[in-house]
Structures are given as C-alpha cells and as structure tokens.
Image 1 (cartoon, each protein chain N blue to C red):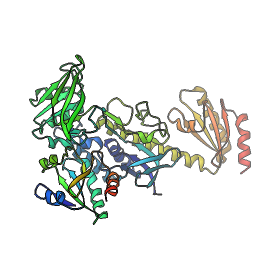
Image 2 (spheres, chains in turn blue, yellow; image 1 turned 90 degrees about the vertical axis):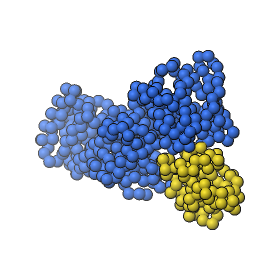
Image 3 (tube, one colour; image 1 turned 180 degrees about the horizontal axis):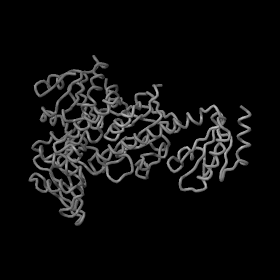
Image 4 (cartoon, one colour; image 1 turned 180 degrees about the vertical axis):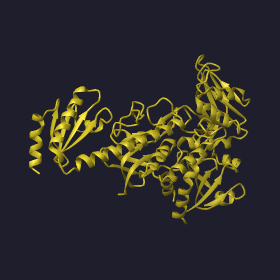
Length: 410
Length: 104
C-alpha cells in the first residue's frame, strides 16, 4: 500500500499534464500514472501549429515535454505505470497497476486518451510494421523516395500527409468525399492542394493491402462506380479517427455507447470524487487545447470537492455537539423561511448545538448522499451520525424535542 | 546493448550463434524511446542467454528494409542468424519478455 495521494491522474497526455499543473500548484499531493513517456497522442504528432502562443514550427513532442516539466516543477510526480484496475466507490480510491502496485487517493482524474482507429481492411493487420502505420513521426523516414498512401481526410490525415511529403516521393490521399471536399481545416487543405507531391483519389475507399512480406500495392474502390483499381505503393498510413482507451473503465464510471466517459461541465463523472478529462470524454472538439482545458477544470473542481468534503467532515461529522444540517436553495422561498427559523432555534440554545447550512443549488453532493429529496430538509447529526431527518417547514415544536433529547443525553 | 549498423549487422546478428534480440528504433520514434530502457533491463537480466542489439533505422534504412522492417518499434528475434519471431508496433516489454522466454 502506498501513501495517500490527494489526486491520482490516470494518463499523462495534455489533459493529465494540465490537471497535474493545476493540482500540484494548489498544493495537492498529485501523481500522474502514465504508461511510458508522457505526452499521449500529441507526443507522436510532429506538426502542432494551433496551440495558442506556440507558433508554427512547434513540435508535438517538444510541447509535451514542456508540459511534463511544468507539472513536475510544481511537484507533480509522474510515474511509469499502466493502470489496469480501479476501485472508485469509497472515499479512498484504489488504483492498481500492471506492475502489481496499489495507489490510493481521495480524487481520481481519468485522462486515458484515445488510440488510432483501425479499419480491419484485408491486409491491415498482416502488414503492420511492414508498411502499414498509424504514426507518421515514427515511420516517415523509412519512406524516403518511396510512395505512400494516406487513408482519411480530417486534420490529422491531411497534416500528417503534408509531413510525409518531406520524406516520400509521392503521397496519395484516398478521400471518401467528392473532389475538393475535405473534413480538415481550411489552412491545411490549401497547403495540401498546393503541394506537388500530394496526389488525390476521390470518392474512394481502401479495399485491400497486398504484398509479399512488405506492402507492395493496394486495391482502391470507387464508391460511386464500384470500380476497383490497383495502385503500387510502399506504405499505407491510416488516420481515420480514434477510439477511447476506456476498456478498463467499463462498469466503473458511466460511458456512452461508443465507450466515451460521460461528464458534466465540471468534468465530474457518474462517481463522486472521480473526474475525466481529454479525448476519452464525450465532447465536441478533441484537440490538445481542449484536453488541457478539461484537465484544468477537473483539477479545479477536484480541489473544491476536497475542500467541501473536508469542511463537512470537520464541522459536522467530527463535531462534539449535535449539528443541525439545513438543506436550502435560494430559489425555494419556503427554505429561506426555514433557515430563519432554524437560526432562531440555534440562537436560543446557544453553544449546545450548531447549525450548518447547505446550499443545494451550489452543492448537491451531500444532499444526494443523504437521500435529501425535499427542500427544505433538516438532518440532525449526533456523534457523526444522522439521528433525525425532518422535511418541510421548520418550527420549534417539530425540532426542539429532538434537540433537547440529544443535548441531555450528552 | 550492442549498437549495430550496416558495418557489423552481419557479424553480430546474422552470423551469431544462439539467440539475438534486435531493437529497431529511430530518434523520432517516441514509443521506441519509451520501450528501449525496459529492453536494456531485459538485456541485463538475460545476460548469457541472449544477445541484445539496437539498430537506428533512420541511419540504416536499407538494412532495416532488407530485414523487412518498415515500422517502429520492432523487436526482432534471430536464432543462429535466422529471424524466428518479430513484435511490431504497440510493443510492451512484457510481450518482449514473454517471447524471449519462449525462445531461450
């Protein structure tokens, strides 16, 4: 068993690293568990031109190294550990890694990221590492003076295709859409159209990859005519989207039907104290900047959560006298009147009881934990346990007997 | 780990007796750089049972392609100069050790 962390971050891409910066800068004991070198997909993206403040020429690996150094400079630990199992339900979360270690924390931020999607085209598996690749930075220099094919037409596909032209003789991009239509951003599209090494095959999909030991040719199918043509090539790069790395989270937090983690805008998952950030989350735009943004929000929300939990523990659960916890909301008039009544009662009894007000508009967690359905409601805590639950309007007749019983019993 | 290139690959790998593990990598390949320190530890652990080499494919492209390596990272296993097994892309050190135990 390791020492207790405030925050365990699962995954060291931009989301996890940003969460590390914010977490450790709030003086929370923060660790990132990351399989291998930090940086995630961005660390294998050569050209990274759209992270504000980092102009053209910025390289993915460099930016990610800077983020990792930044997080470590505030005290974030980054450990080379692959998370395989988690126990998220209790107040103390337990995270188990492939190396057999166990880590404990009060908060878990899930930032496992995503991986390139495979299409299961005939030959795709067989020729992995034999010309089929998902990582241009890893493999581009093999293809100096050779011909390659790129499948896909989003940002990643077009930008990596442009990068590949620095090495390959020709780069043929297979696009499913009509001529001239690409899913990528306009700047990259213009650059690609102007690049003499890039060739285009429109209205088409890759049908099969063939070769003898290494990739030698591909079969391309025109989806309008159904016609199949053959193209000689030495490599095939796939950039056809990603899938979330959330297999190990099934049954632990709520996922959507494609496996992405569902959160609200505070990055809270379906489990209290567990947050998610980055590409593995259900979201509109998956980029380095939005991943970093998620990480910042998750760590900030986590800090607030820890502070609220700590306050509740100190003021209510560890109190040495009976505590009235009043659940109210600014938009419920009846609850404001109830608070007034409870304040009068607390004044009357002086030091022997305590009143703690819970604004359920700002914090629903404690209310839902204790099954509060009606506002106003009152929980009377004694020695850290709920002694009485009262819902609806508050009055001396309803409340005082319970209080006197507890005060006397002391 | 022994650094191999076109000048000594034949001597160190193809003409070597017993088991030789070759880690194909390049300076631009982040997953390769992440894997290599772990492979280096295996090299210590399996000292005397297998020889460990590393090959920079960026500087030895033709040699890599002659070994039918066209993607990184690739870990190739040679026995008496014959390639007997290969792991490529998304390689973990656990995979490497499992394969090693199979072949040792």
